[in-house]
Image (cartoon, rainbow, N blue to C red; front, side, top):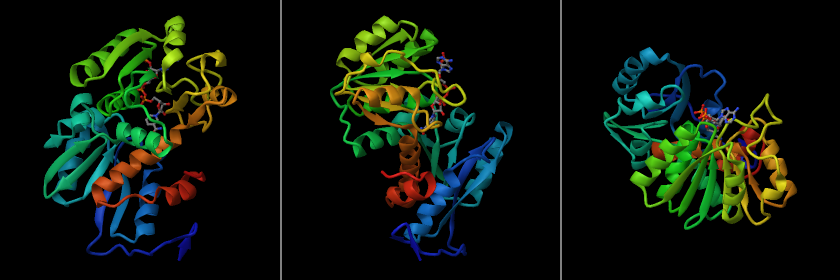
Length: 296
Ligand code: NAP
């Protein structure tokens, strides 16, 4: 069978099929099952991916069950990312620093926790030829997604990270985490300090929105209101993927900046998990076309 120009192999679920999946609650809206199952089918490899609605109080029982069944691995969504840290045997460097796990790999009963949100974001930058090593990056937000991106960007060689958040104390805590654990220098400010934000953008290679501003239904909100603060030679990334093009990205496009929407990060964080479980690269262009109806 041919799927979007790629050979698709019909893989039967049989005695050799390895189980992967998603734990969290709610999970019914998740695109992860269709992303991963499309990729397994496309490569013709014996895996399947299921979504399991597991309340936080049942997480440990679910993990023990999956371990007993020798599941290959699983993703974890909010609010379980922190709790999962305590349930694995070891963590990747980024997951240990952040204290959160979104992907678990089961190697013969030994569970390793990874956080692919940050590594997926960095991979997406690389695929789009946005180079940030040795550069200054401005990051708005200090929640779960922003923390993952900040730590991975710092581990991957960003020289300076300017962090702006509505709650300045959370920005300060994230800057402290970065400064204590990586060679990157991080500074923290309140998002309301728009003067410093404007100045910081003068020499930043990349601006990232990691807040919920711009997310539906509040699509008219944005971390900045003045397009002129954006330089045409900088890149602007938004972690928000609903809508696909936020008000911030529209402003950035109108200024001639390279823009990167949140679906790219969603795709590549899944691709990183896929590779950890299967040892194979996810066919991202097929998944992007089939699941997100976009080109990568
Ligand atoms: P979170 O942990 O709840 O953090 C929310 C962040 O948004 C915090 O920094 C918060 O500031 C800020 N915020 C919320 N409302 C705000 C407002 N009215 N004004 C200013 N700042 C505001 O959420 P998250 O998981 O990090 O998600 C953040 C965004 O990233 C969401 O839109 C989510 O859909 C998206 N996301 C995308 C991906 C992807 O793969 N593309 C993955 C994960 C998340 P305070 O700290 O001051 O509350």
